[in-house]
Amino acid sequence: MFKLYEKYLEVIDKYLKQCFASQSPFIHCKIGCTDCCELGEYPFSRLEAEYLMAGFPLLPAEIQTEIKKQIKNLLQQKSEHKKDERFLHRCPFLLDKKCVLYERRGITCRTFGLAWFEEVSGKKVVKLPECSKIGLNYSEVLDNGEVDMNKFNDNGVLSPIQHSLSLNYFEHELLRGVEGIEFGEIRPLLEWFNANH
Image 1 (spheres, rainbow, N blue to C red):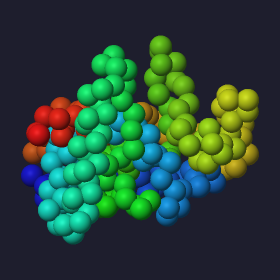
Image 2: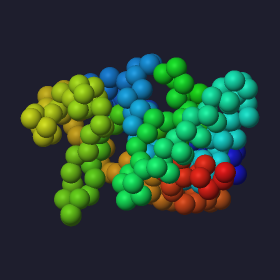
Image 3: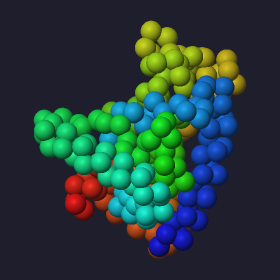
Image 4: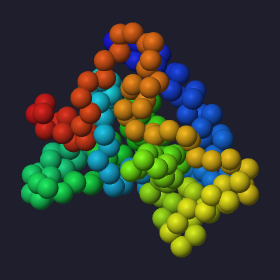
């Protein structure tokens, strides 16, 4: 299953490379910028979680120990968190401003930083990465917190990606005609550890 998934990721990565290139005037991502990994839920499908964790035993023992400690602490914090609120947290695989399993990161992680259109109440609405609010990706198109579409055109970017960047899109729309890949249920990353430990 992983071999087929890795072929799928090659296609996704090629597609996302084009997306990032088309939005390059507004992309400020660089090595060491980890804002997208500092506060989130990180939705992962079962397949993505299994693929991520298949790389875990290949890490040095001290890194494995540190990640296990972080996951244990986060699960404890989550158990004390209000059940009806989202539990946002730092990704446990982020150490020293680097993802220790970067090559195995999920599709959500691969799309961080891009702008896209989302269907909301029958209308297309521009969605920007959270880092736009702190002067990073796409901050140039914000005007008093609202998206100014003219600023896209002024910088040679015609528009955001025309579809959602949700896992559902990548798993269903981009998988049409691909046989043999089953992503399974989608959960926040920590829930995969809750389920397995």
